[in-house]
Amino acid sequence: MTKGLTGTVVIALAFLLISITLFGCEKVPEEVKLYEKILKANPKNKNAWFKRGIILEKYGRYEEALKSYEKALEIDTKFKEAWNGKGGVLRNLNYASRNFEESIEAYDKALNIDSKYKEAWYGKSCALGFLLRCEDALKASAEALKIDPEYKDAWISKGIDLINLRRWDEALQSFEEVLRIDSKYTPALLDKGTVLINLGRNEEALKVLDEYLKVYPESAPGWYEKGLVLNNLGRYEESIKAYNETLRIDPAHKRALEDKNNILIKLKK
Image (cartoon, rainbow, N blue to C red; front, side, top):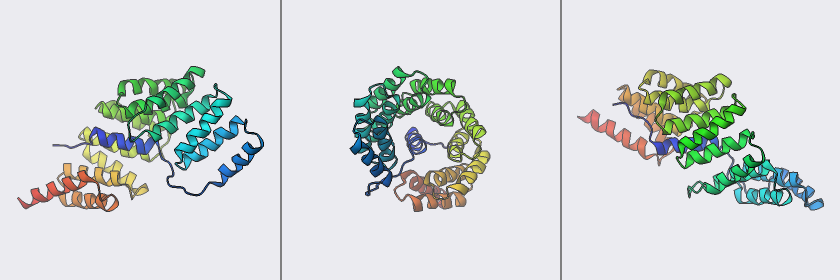
């Protein structure tokens, strides 16, 4: 029987594709120091607080970024970009606890100021998707795409929600739309591979995943899915090699270990 990814894995992949950031930066970035000088001269400079927040968020310093966005909002409660920034930071801060309600509230604040603010619709779709409120998330991404039909991040978000709803054909259309907009946007190939596996189109999935792994050879999810495809095709030795690559990159990958062991048991019979 063809095997596909679980909803949990899909959500993890969604988080990786939507929230690529730099973590663990101990040193204060030079850009932050620049804005701190500006703020020392003028603490009421809302744009400096906002830009400081963007940089801190980029470096994974979410608590500090949140304070910067809130400072900007103390100066101007109608600062939609700061509400959007706050929504994104809260989404990252609360990912482990799965508490995304505050994030959604911040996006709603931005949208109350500007209902055509596509980035806020996209951010809201991500937060709703992480809560597995997939139908609501699809409505939010649809709003973003009404404003900008070429908005590839919104197409990705839409595709992920369709995966979680097991609406495979529609999900495939979403990822193909991303690649039509930007043929070099390789991360979409991983999600496209997921969909093709679940549609039973394993040969096509293998080609797509090989293309993805050329660009991201250290992607544990990519190697795991390749192992899955090869397993589905009955190419067990190659599948084991792919699972071994997965475990080399991510030794804690339980599904790769389980699937590998199942193949080894099968081969011994």
